[in-house]
Image (cartoon, rainbow, N blue to C red; front, side):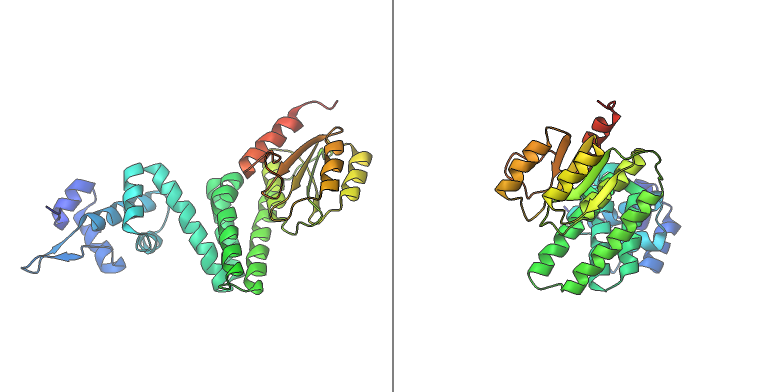
Length: 293
């Protein structure tokens, strides 16, 4: 038999005052959706999950309006997962909602919205979790939609600019002093530098200054820089475009003079040393915490 609740029964079950439940229904449309043959309104299990999730979102700091808007976008299985998993489910839902909002801002050509959502995710989850669970998944989806024609080049550039501004702002919140002992760069054919900008922000939060050499760095330029500055570590990013065989040989040689870390999916199988921002940041933190040779 399907469960149905009156407002009083649901109030008692969830510990939410009946007047509050009635206000949520009247103001925000979060209320009972089932009617008995006699016309009486009843809460279904999905309605109950929606109310419980809205209460948790409010406890997590959202306004009632924003909490209601969010729960109405969630599918029944998502609501059930949140209710069943408690704070961890709320965190996962927060990730998904932020991804959704970045994509919405992209489609609306709203750069300010994209930047704001990214900044809020960084403030709420920290730079590493925000990148791994929100920003990177959003950028991957933008790439998918650009490839199949649902988004244009302008949209891809807009979201990149908004995210870049948010990452730069996060790094500036933690000014670092002293000589840089780590180099962040992309291989020569790699145009996507957001991952190394995010890594720079993560290093700044951990107190490590860095030198960013950006996208499309020729291997000979990297070699010259390492020879002249003798960094403790170098992080190289490659996503869709991998290095040439010649460059791989030169990188192997470079790795004998400095700690060389590789990130991204563009490397041959087994070569990448990190597969997430949190992993890369932890590896570099460990390398930079060691004394100079």
